[in-house]
Image 1 (tube, rainbow, N blue to C red):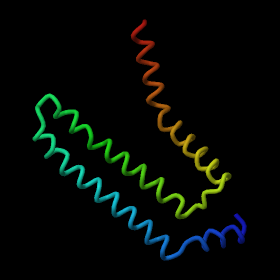
Image 2 (cartoon, one colour; image 1 turned 90 degrees about the horizontal axis):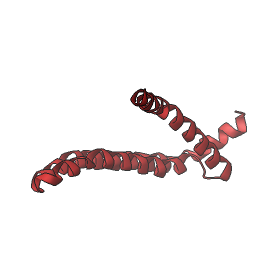
Image 3 (spheres, rainbow, N blue to C red; image 1 turned 90 degrees about the vertical axis):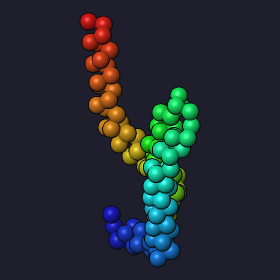
Length: 116
């Protein structure tokens, strides 16, 4: 990375952008903590056949809030140009591929062992 590109990245950082990022992180942490506390309380109030369905919302809320935090915070630091979006999507695809590699191989191993 040459000095001009590095200077351009540093010009993007400001106290306001760091404050926005900190606010996004604090709100996300608050949503995760509140959902972990109040969804189980809500599950106690619903009929017993829906209790597990309501309790399964805790990881879903956590995942969605973290995903929203990433989506909201990336444009703060990386300008959303076409080239940057292609690079981010490519890197995300590679990371997702490596993350799911073991699960997919285990799934195929299970399918093969079922039919042997």
